[in-house]
Length: 163
Image (cartoon, rainbow, N blue to C red; front, side, top):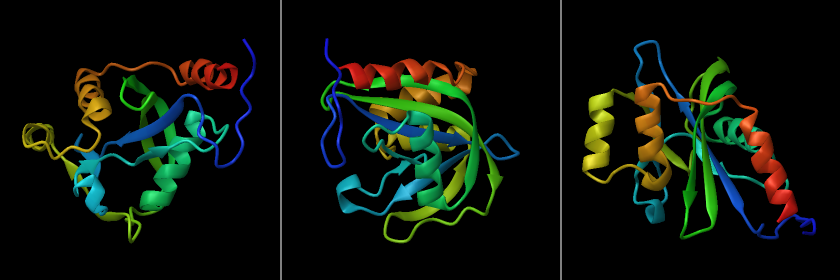
């Protein structure tokens, strides 16, 4: 098995997306309303695709900073989910804000707010949650307190380099 070398602009054989679940003091989850019509103005956590050879942890930190202007400390992995349609893997992290004030990025995010469990269940029921293939099972894990250490992402980052 050879090593695949990714170059900027090339599509990797397996792509990663990273999502970040951030809670407030009341245990509510931060969700962002997508501004893009192709994303149907749905709600989801700060998230995005990895760049070429970017570690999933770096993706999560970068995307959170780009979308809402805050620095975060990742605490653990809530789940790793496969999207069979796109050959993608979604990794959802739990994080705490360490610096900054939530400021949605213009042109990408319409609104940022914290949702209670009941409100998130209503978004799921009304099909208003973005990327449900990742976010619905991640929400379930988050509610149940299921998580894994951050180190499990190292194996995934290495896997992409060997495909």
